[in-house]
Length: 113
Length: 111
Image 1 (cartoon, one colour):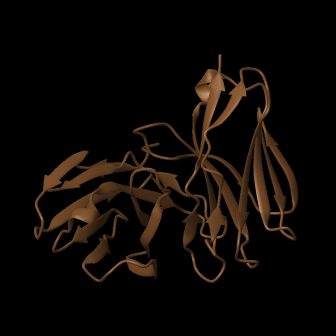
Image 2 (cartoon, one colour; image 1 turned 90 degrees about the horizontal axis):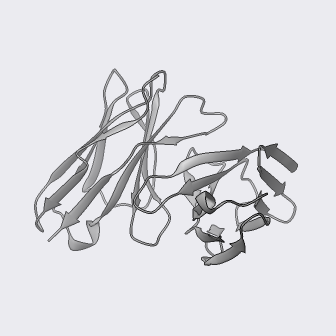
């Protein structure tokens, strides 16, 4: 059974640029959630995708957008990068939406200069 | 009021002792509760989930839930140095599938 994978591992961008982060869900999982984790903080919910549809969104501006593909992999896109977007971006996948158990990938460390 | 609150620590516990981690939450409709362990520089790892009042045991870990008091805790028995990590409490907010995390408690097991 393949776990959750994310790419790239690390990324350095400059203010104003755009970035796309990728996530492959664990085998058999149909739901992907994205989180932003700043240093010393808990993960902050960005949004969730269930069967290719957005299924909930946190308090993030519209420049954070996402996509889920038929194979349940997902992308997180961030436009007009700001310095405060520097963080660890985590993807978590789940199958059973009633139990809500989510399993995290290794994350992408984004640095905005 | 913050939705999920944890003491940030650090909590220092001697090796072999019981570590007790606490969490309170604000949404009375919350139904699902989780504890994640996060080592420095790594992603969170799910260690316990609990859905009903009472205790749930898994090896050296026991999760305790009290919905009336809006309180969930994690006990780690026979603490080992490898248990040193940040422990994140997470709660499902019942109105949607969003899961809210606390800031985490740093646990340090003293050899």
